Image (cartoon, rainbow, N blue to C red; front, side, top):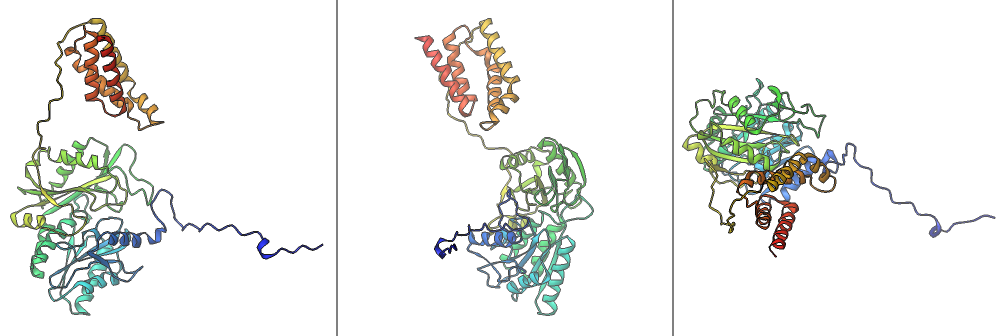
Length: 465
């Protein structure tokens, strides 16, 4: 017997799951790594209507001002991707007119740079800002030369080399100070020669250095050993000046400032602008501590303007920071603080010698009369010592179900109880419990603090009754 299946009876093929692109990694927010730079540029443009790109993907990746009319000197810069928001994030009125992007850590082509120059250059001319890397110098310089010889355009170039870590004199985050000052000069209607002079002045009076706890781990195996940090590690993972044991942020900031201020470009400066740059993955909390230590350093009196802290010239996920210093005068201060529409520029703000502190409301309405009870004092001290000793273990246990801070919270409370025990009414159990309720409610955060405060308060009220 032959059996014949009708079309509708035939088993249907299961839909195929699209093959993931080669190089796809689950721990990165990517689709196809080969399209990452293009997709990132388009994402930037979707949130910034004053920016546009040239129609040239995949070879031409150029972001330009959508409102540009070629009426003033144009400013062009760029380089490999992976340093976002540099360069495209700094395109806007008062900074760059166009930014040219290559692939990750790879210089854009001559044609890509030339396309940018031709797109934005008018009668006033164009200044091309080039970072001191072989690929950038070759491609940008040759593109500028072609723009001059083949198209008759007025094009000048400058090369940034602010990194003082090694003899390579690489262009890093200090390049952004060049973009800002030169961009402001161009926006003010200065001539090409004047804009170039401003850019060169910043180059001649600025210096930078970075430090990192990791290399670029998204691209290759980490080269910085655990417990070490590399001073001067390049933004593409190039070797730095030296490797040292990790240290508190105060020592790190002091070391960076000491190394940078050895450079004769900034040594004699009486006033400084400091750009505080996040190289990629340092939490904002830690970046703020960097600023705090910068303004507590022996050089704080010279710091008149602060840019950041912010991720400005990054290296993908590098866990590090860089500081860029430039010698200030009144003209440069005006240029750095001039308005700009560039979306990634955080602003240059006057540095504060100390944080502003206002008197807060008085929350303690009860004044305890200190008294002693040796047995209670001994018990409290034993509990405090036990909690302090158990900090690590409690954090580990809490980490299995929560945010791993229970031990630290308890240890903080124990320290406060030990410090204030001498002023407690220990001979009055109800008053002692009320004091513990107030103290835990004040010094402990999270769920533990409020729960212990409620517990001690209820116990004290029960004893009163």
